Length: 92
Image (cartoon, rainbow, N blue to C red):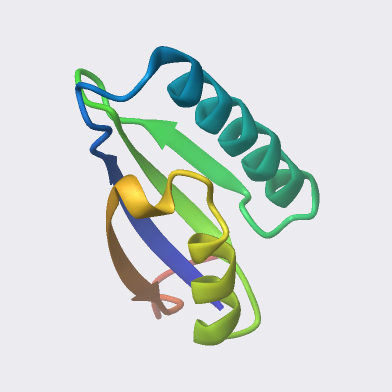
């Protein structure tokens, strides 16, 4: 199942810089593991925002929720999920 996911990060301005750096480092490591596993095949930065558009390729809604809630930045994110279906005009 494919999902389009928008993630907007909202870190507190008063978050300790060392704590922030640790969370961001763990986020990068976790997200790259998911990318290498094929679960997160696409990620794009949204210019001018601390946000991204991503495509996830997972087996179920529950798996997507598990992966997203495992993100170290999860509690600091606004996340919008759109399920995707193959378009009948797609030649792929």
